[in-house]
Image 1 (tube, rainbow, N blue to C red):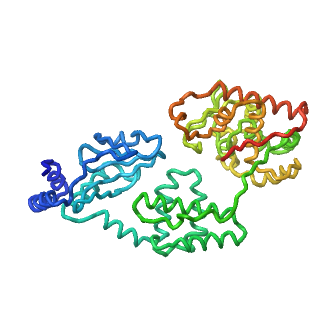
Image 2: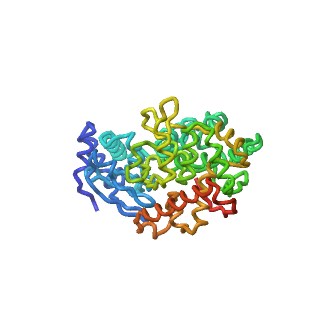
Image 3: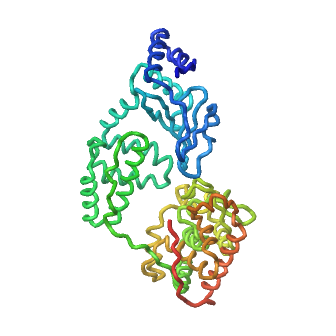
Length: 445
């Protein structure tokens, strides 16, 4: 059946080409299967609504709970925006070449705005109308891309946009990956070469770093496959090169007491950082980056999505002991935006040197900062707080169908849990509770 959609000829006019010649080619292509914009049809697990794209509304298009949604423009058939559950947005263009459907990734939003993406889509459709295959040509070009080019695109287009830990990715890429693969064609890197790289990292005395490197390389190539820059991931079927033991360290009541006492000799801002991490059970990066405007007069600390690992706003109740610590450091804030300011005007960041001195002063062996979060979670569970409530305090995201429908905030339960834990800290540091054994409840990063 021959399409009578006048938009095809209109696209040619807008491209500023020879209308009569290209229109004839387009009609010919339409009959033979060249250059046909694909009418979006819903695929399994992928929503494909058709709407009118408006520049100011692109950022607000809803992301799916899982998988992806592809929104298509009513103005230009085949032109769309792919939105993933992680919030990543990519402009796409669908067309047919010799009867086969093709998908062309135009670029990412917001790096590429709606107006520019539309112009590029028109160009893709115009080329397809002439019988060209833009997606295949792009694929051939990308296969010639070096690993350095691919890695730097990954950092700029994905890691910096979506990962709070993007600097860790950058460090691995520039320390181990680019020196080894930088000038190589990304598509030619083999599984054997990845194995050899990981082996060399482990053999230099960094077995866990070898695991982290594998995770980053695997993510980089998966991203590249999604962007249609490479076809295969050389990390497929490669297991972690080094075993990792799940840490279960929980401080005893006596160790908590010694830690609390040792903090009295540290600078007030550093002492408050440790005590707030223990009292609130929140991640160090969330505590250290807290600002005054996140804390309300009613006793709640609201961490915005941009500072939370799972990108979901998180409300934390500040128990009496936590509020007392915050009040104690007010004279040291120096008018800073941050609750725990540093000397350079930002917020407190690195605790490594202080932590080493603190471990020595408190005589607590095998103690890491993240143990504070696990300790708080384990003590709450030991006092009868349900695991679900502890998970809400920790802001762990549930991967269950029920969680999709359960939108209750658990505010009263979170408040009770942290008040109970705060009262227990008071008993421990005052010496009213002696050391006991608490079973670890894993509190992952």
